[in-house]
Amino acid sequence: MLAITLLVLCAVGTQALDNGLARTPPMGWLIWERFRCNTNCKLDPNNCVSEKLVKEMADRMVEDGYKDVGYEYVNLDDCWSDKERDAQGRLQADPDRFPSGIKSLADYIHSRGLKMGIYGDYGTKTCAGYPGSLGHLQTDAQTFADWGIDMLKLDGCNSNVTTMKKGYPEMTKYLNATGRPILFSCSWPDYERAAKIPINYTLVADNCNIWRNYDDINDSWGSITGIIDYYDKTQDTLVPAAGPGHFNDPDMIVVGDQGINVNQANAQMAMWSIFAAPLLMSNDLRNIQPVYRDILQNKEVIRINQDPAGKMGKRVLTRGPGIEVWLRPLNLWDEWGLVLYNSAAKPGTISMSLKEIGFTYGLGYELRDILSHVEIGHREIYPVYNYTVPATGVLMYYAYPSE
Ligand SMILES: *[C@@H]1O[C@H](CO)[C@@H](O)[C@H](O)[C@H]1NC(C)=O
Ligand SMILES: *[C@@H]1O[C@H](CO)[C@@H](O)[C@H](O)[C@H]1NC(C)=O
Ligand SMILES: *[C@@H]1O[C@H](CO)[C@@H](O)[C@H](O)[C@H]1NC(C)=O
Ligand SMILES: *[C@@H]1O[C@H](CO)[C@@H](O)[C@H](O)[C@H]1NC(C)=O
Ligand SMILES: *[C@@H]1O[C@H](CO)[C@@H](O)[C@H](O)[C@H]1NC(C)=O
Image 1: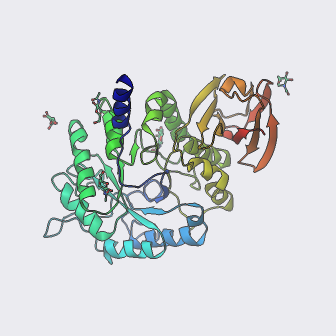
Image 2: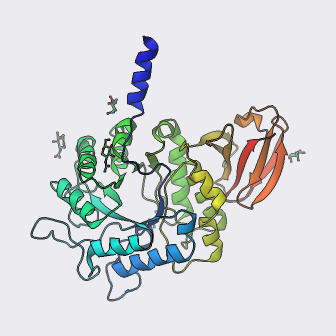
Image 3: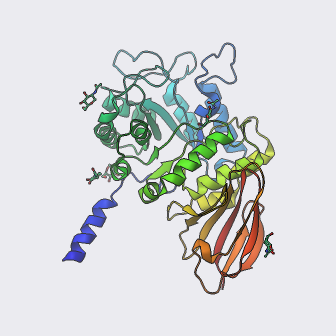
């Protein structure tokens, strides 16, 4: 009897949004961090938020190999819309910057074998002051579905945060009622955190495919480490919330932008893969150095990110100032993504055995360095080895049991 009750409770506890999407973390491109709310197409025609820019990014995704390794979504953010709704109360695109309209842009993106994401806001206005969805949630859900949208990021500026626990799930229902599967990205928990309202991640996962927990990222190492620190501090809450169909979102990938170097770029991709985080690049794919393209397209790292078990990894060891060891359990028995992360501005060495980070298999493990694509080979669990981790960087291994 007790066993049956427990089973039922567990089944309820793990019920999550069932729209068939985000079984692994979504991958794609998102305009915001790199292009922001640049609406000045007269002065800056190549970088303003416009259908031209979005089409160019879709083309680069297909022609430069991103699509082949799994990047799929091409996403607008704030500042795509007109300042007014149309006569029927529907959102409409800015007519100068999106002269063909969003439906036509979505058709173009689909014709390239990709998916299209759009942005809305749960409040009265978006963060940049464009029309918000409050009082229009059902209309906006239907409009997005009519246009062929595949993903919606719903921000939370200019709203009453205490109503989000009710309001975001309403949008989930309206999206579902359109009959079109639309991946739902919620900013809701981040607003609750900022307002010091307790976050119920069970409720969040029941209603959202991905969700932001923390501040917006920017193109700097300080921003990346700030997010990693937050995930470190809150991992006991975040890890159980994640799973196929529902993932924590530490925000965009800034690899290929100007503010971070190669070590830091590898570190972001590695940590986001341990987190089972969405890989939504925000960069200029028309103009990216090959070294960063290779980091973004590292198939061995992406394979860890996209592991079908969808389990989020966690920090298992902290050593001295700056070095942390993170482990993500993979789908096959006793296989792991292993990252040694050094937040400090000089290289650091950590001496450790595999045993002390939780590896138990008596025959030992094989390690493969998936940043350099080199087999490290067999390691017993008890001997202590030294690992030297680059300044503001990582070592990343795929570890699996020895035969
Ligand atoms: C709507 O929700 C039902 C029940 O959770 C689910 O089976 C269905 O696939 C959903 N449809 C869409 C379009 O999300
Ligand atoms: C926010 O919503 C709560 C709950 O509905 C309500 O009690 C409160 O008055 C609202 N606050 C504001 C400033 O509207
Ligand atoms: C969190 O949400 C779940 C799902 O709706 C609910 O069953 C549970 O009671 C909530 N927990 C709290 C502490 O409110
Ligand atoms: C980037 O983020 C960091 C950490 O949150 C912050 O200290 C910094 O001011 C931000 N930089 C810009 C240009 O917004
Ligand atoms: C690891 O480094 C320590 C300190 O430098 C050194 O004493 C030890 O011999 C090294 N161990 C191995 C296995 O290289």
